[in-house]
Length: 202
Length: 202
DNA sequence: GCTTTTGCTGACATTTGTGACATTTGTGAC
DNA sequence: GTCACAAATGTCACAAATGTCAGCAAAAGC
Image (cartoon, rainbow over all chains, first blue to last red; front, side, top):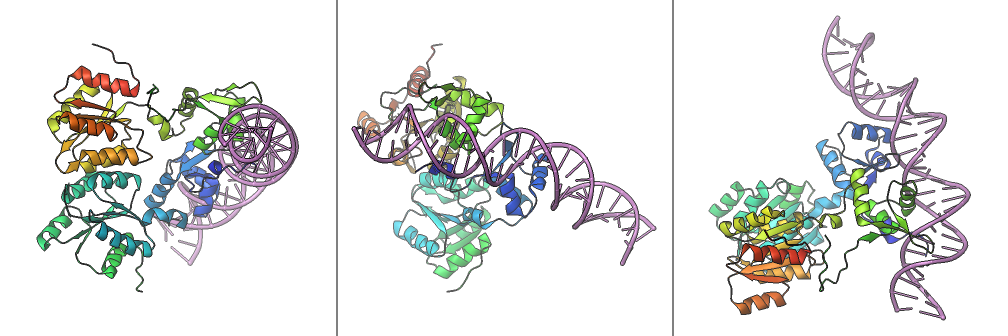
């Protein structure tokens, strides 16, 4: 039982070296250093020789900014879905469908939970039930769209409300609306269209 | 700066080992020892084997000197207070008092905002109005206390509710209760007692 | 008392930064 | 098309920093 402390192994790598990035991008690490020097890629330096270290989020930002393909290891961040629904049965149903399709999911049953999870779970997409007691779905829409760090989150409204309300939701920031009851395939297709995944019929 | 509450189970770390620093910096502890040997990082040695120990303030100084990112655990030494209140006037009043006393503040006007801010603003203390339409203050208390990453946040309940409700709040996780209307000094004293700051009468 | 974990040391392997220089790529003019 | 030119990228050798490993002993837990 020597060495190899779990703490040093960083399973989910969140700090990268220039060499790591060179391998991911299939370029020479010298090139990576030049990207850093020119400020294209955000990094910080270790004391000694000045070795560069890059946070994964900075790397992802860099990749997105330059339309580079994102390595699979980091794609998991793109498959996180937050389900906002106060009815446990409905939330569980949505969760089951999404989990089976390979998405990571979390359920929020009220506004406070939704808020904590949206910043800590960091989903790339949320499903939002508009008609929840004690929570104004439209306010959530508005807040997300006006918040710089959240505005890129895709939002699918799932609701039993009438068409005029759904139209309003779209105008206030929802990317898509699905009316209850819905088909499993509809949900998966909608998500796939927003995340850029391909939807495979089963 | 460190809270010394009698009920505080989690002893705040103010002395670090090389292993701790290695984990924080995502570096091998051998490297940390070399930083110490070269005098880049201030440390002292224990008698026996000569184990290195680093004071948190020295570590922070080291991080700042070298522009390294500071782990979140050490950011919480800041005086960040989240004010959860749906009445803009009341929230603004509390904010004014706290700002003048040197605290960083943010206001959440509903549960969703409170949730997003509690994980993104990362406050070390929150003031919570229990009686807010559309949000159950007790549910918020419960959620915070049951959540591993939030449970260390201090909570001051500010409410016009009767004593039995305030007692209930305390039993469900509130550190202190203040009944409306309150004196400015009461609020500041309460906060100071929870954060370990000293309260200076003006 | 015991066992397990953690930290130090020294030797060695690997990675990274730097500078100089070669090669490739993109662009616009002809 | 091709030519010249600039910019980006790759290559190389060297030095320095960092990582790895094994053995040992102290520290921590029980």
